[in-house]
Image (cartoon, rainbow, N blue to C red; front, side):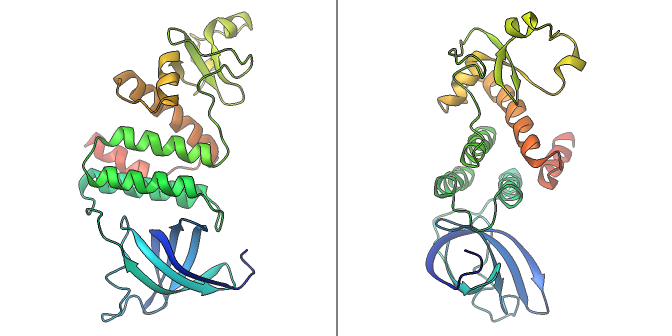
Length: 253
């Protein structure tokens, strides 16, 4: 698709990232409904009287027109759709975290309409001031599922036996959730940190809650954060996220 001439009009999109280009322009990454992540040149967007200057805002719904045949297209027009409160404080940092995940983990011009809807829902929830941890966990899970990493939540990875709420599991990336008794039979000492590594212990109830989109329990929130962070780190190949570092530093302060 990157080599074909495109003329895209009235495409719902969100601005993910922007960098100055030459004296008056920007190169922006946008996440669009029908074409996924797209790189665009916004010519003259930094000029004081440019119509794009006040429109190209992150965390705001936009309609965009663009054209071009290369990897980076030319932005023709952008319209602000309104209805989304500005993100402030910690909600703003959460928004940057979601944007960084999309930039780092999605390929250009790879459509993800379900993930687009999940992102819009997350932005709306952040704008309403809802509790942020469940918003982040829902989006992280939607991202992994849409990228093809179907986190096993309701069945044990090896046996296909249904996960039981009162059982404890070790989540192994190559296998999914594995009962501690099964691992003990295999000779794994789950009390030995060197044997377990970064693979989180997690309750069956947490896995079932995640499958049901229910993050109301404190234990589910805590354990799902550990699990999803491990899976995202694996998908990133161990490369750190800048926004996550900033969030951590603010928590320490």
